Image (cartoon, rainbow, N blue to C red; front, side, top):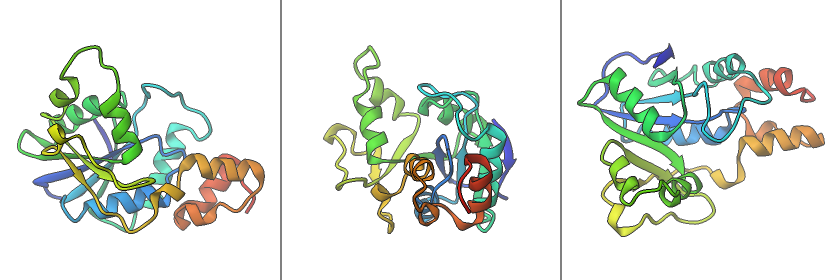
Length: 202
């Protein structure tokens, strides 16, 4: 795990927000800020390789720069990279970096949680096995999230003030492409970087 910024101290509970951040959005910041109610630190993890995507649009270095600018006001936010972006790989990298005693809380929206839980891993009990190594903090998107009963002890709902369903990196890129307003979806601190990286109108 490579750190670009690391919060001071050693948290007993660590929030982990892994994503493509193409670009970072207000939803990412809202999710991370909400997690600080239960975690002493939140680390934004940008993998160098994605399991189902490739780098398009902003480069790895551009995305790190945008994360640095977007999170500069919160000393409990860290920024790091891992080799790959699978939840289990990210969790194990965090475990190695933060030690065996830290409680790992991976942050995601309910859509990402559904994808993880319903994915065909080719063997029974795969999801439960992963959740022995980390827990999920899940924010609602398009309705209240309800985890499967057998996984409820390791999956927790994370209340977030913002309507995350209305904010996504895909929507920002699409609005830029169409020449539509997009600034209300992005942190103001990275507006100039978004204009540079994605060819957006000022």
